[in-house]
Image (cartoon, rainbow, N blue to C red):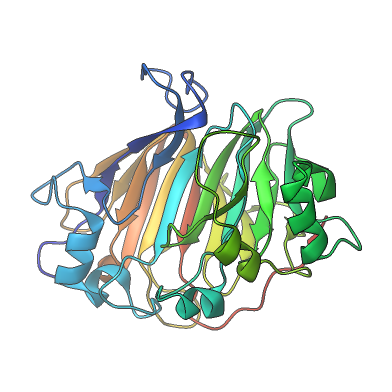
Length: 333
């Protein structure tokens, strides 16, 4: 195991023109002088904030520890598999598309970017655009882009706190204002911007249109209601199971035991993100780590078993790589 232990990550705040100065729903004590669009939690360049590995990035640790950190289920032993981040859209994001694995590999990237969005907060009327309207072709989308009316051909849907949205690679999409989103995705930053409302940013129409799929399995994930964990006051809600990631929600009111292996017997690094409350992550022989709203803790695969002890109450997401092949989730628009 070397000297791996649960790693508290330092958020990386990324300015974006569609962001906001007010991140108080998640980071009430942070003040910013430029608009922040994203808070990166487990990107390659995100740094550890606790213990002997303080200042090390996840890419450095993945190269050094490989399967001890990322687990058996990750495709690449030397690359951290999942990127989680908060999104704070205050204006519309660009209309964009991410390639799937096949399209990414055609342009020399190791993998594509399938993602999902957990809607942590949403104001009334908050919307996203996901895919094309029924009957709209990729050619018609391209024509609409040149005619500066791309928004008209997109499929806009209302979103509410607690929704989980699956966004398969190849899906044209954008976020409207009024929500706070936790995004879980393949560890890739390949984004093709198709339309940006006249903002002076580069568009990527050639590669972007090549990546667009007219039919995708994206949408709101159809999932069961949260369940009480037997013998406790804690609740567990499976949010999405997909080929690249599994994301669950836990509402913990008393100590909770978790593991880095799923029912396949294979291990995966676990990424825990607190969306409400505070708690402590504990593992045998290791220093406890506090997990508060807005924080992420990376639990290395080699830790095997760990506990979550809430301080009054803690609501957190857990993301990991599934140990067995999973199909795309059932969704609706």
